[in-house]
Image 1 (cartoon, one colour):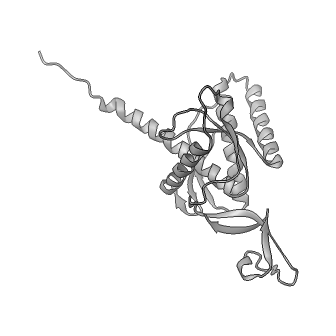
Image 2 (image 1 turned 90 degrees about the vertical axis):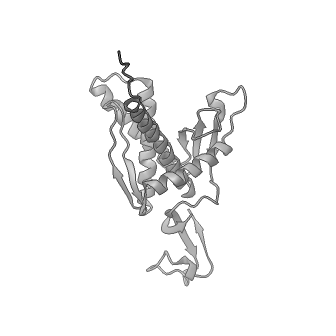
Image 3 (image 1 turned 135 degrees about the vertical axis):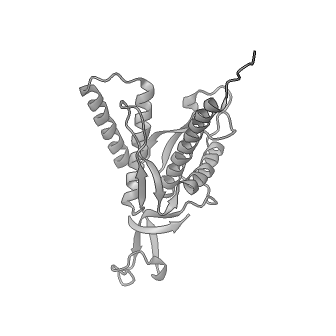
Length: 227
């Protein structure tokens, strides 16, 4: 009698695909974090695990900008109201995921308002969760490069947010105000304002500050930087 062996290929392929999808999502979120911080938006982040190997997921606890944080809170309350009106029962896990998605949605909206060109594609998800669109391109760079840069940001965050032995999850929160200057993050439009003497300020070409003497930058005219 012959023995029929079940193929593991049909089992491993979906698992590998899901693992890759989770990995890419972490990289994309890290990329968004890196871009936001480079644009002057400081973030309070929470590290979830002590393991320094591989990628680590980071939760956004708060955005250190009152206007942006108020918009996040407002959007989240609107989502909660929608869920209640539809008599949906939502697990805490889905609430947490939705709150994180809203954080990233609004950070991307901010980056878009600064002049960054972002193209999206919708993703599948639970009908009870706020669904975040995934990035197809960011200022012309495609997903592969976004993931590559996001992975570098993730490794930087792992080094910056250390978990001491015996500490709980709440013990591994930190406000991140900057990223490694060696990490190159695409042509990036930031939110800076030009200040200079009135005689030197060219109102028709406010972005050409390198051609204007006696000027300096401070945090709202769109200026592209190659980080």
